[in-house]
Length: 160
Ligand code: DLZ
Figure 1 (cartoon, rainbow, N blue to C red):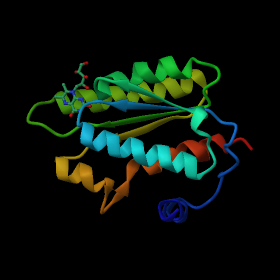
Figure 2 (cartoon, rainbow, N blue to C red):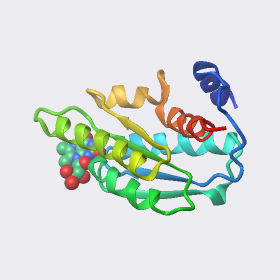
Figure 3 (cartoon, helix red, strand yellow):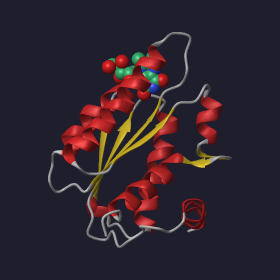
Figure 4 (cartoon, rainbow, N blue to C red):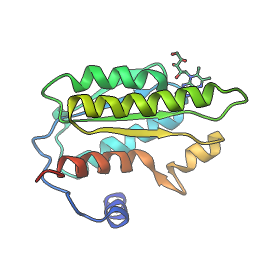
């Protein structure tokens, strides 16, 4: 509950509505698994704390963040899913791989949301180091998985 209050105070409670009938897909990238599992845990618990039911939260895994876009498309095209949360962690390396993956997944996820007209949330960390990632996956800078879940909830309340 402390996490919930923290997130609500950081983001305000605007557009937070009843989500008990809403169905969520959470897509988790396997790369940097320690980080993405912590993001998943934060997102899942935050949805439950806000009234989502366990049966309405489905989890799907993809090999890496690059695959989040297609995973999001497969989930978003299912008419019963109200919102998709994409979780990944791309750590800066010595090559341009980082830039290609980050650009691709940011554009891909954006396009899926626009195409299917539903919230598709970018919960992808892009830190320089594993330490920075863990600081944002339940560490001193909070958990971006929680924030991704809050963002999904708030976007579902947008039109009400
Ligand atoms: C190949 C790769 C590299 C180098 N780094 C990461 C990373 O830090 N985080 C991540 O989620 N995925 C990484 N990948 C894998 C790509 O996302 C993708 O799975 C492969 O390029 C295959 O399409």
